[in-house]
Length: 254
Image 1 (cartoon, rainbow, N blue to C red):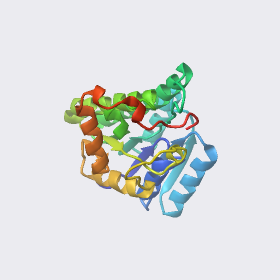
Image 2: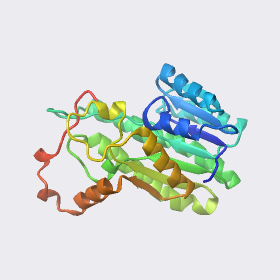
Image 3: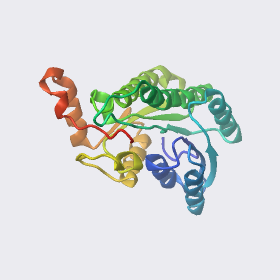
Image 4: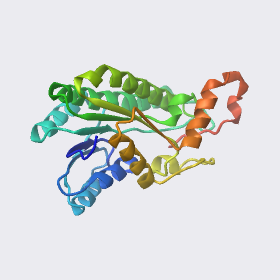
């Protein structure tokens, strides 16, 4: 979608979410920003206002379905939503140990339920007026089950498939749906990694790629291409060909 006037972004307190808010911020644009960290979220809103946008910060938890539905409804009532970016997500790794049940449930709750709690209220509003765009943040990790982050890979695979199916389901009803699959992006989430991260890029560059893809209504915005090609190759190979022990593992505290 070109030139959306009301944009809602979750996970806007840092990383790609904050970079997207700053990129879209300009006079005539309204930004509804959601995040867990009140201080950083307000900093994002202030930066957007300095660029001429009208920006509102809403601290909250994307796993709270009722609160998310109420907030999204309020945002849409104030001005119809043109673009909703379901970006909120967390990551953690196993390091030298195993992923605990509590860690796995937390990641799945935020990354999967958080997307559902954002997308489902928004897409019904958009379909009712046959206008709007949904962007779902997945990952290149959605194409292969890396043993260092099982719940993260599973959550990103789930939202990718959900978004791709949703695109076909809602296309004739006027709601555009795109799935975003970034590789390594320099954010607090990746700063703790202790292994080489090929083709890592800044949040600002990632935001520009995402916006360009959304402008074109791309079904899948996957980047950088060399990393995308690599994970697709891994997914096509028999799993036994790649010993899991050789794959890098994320730190436990990430």
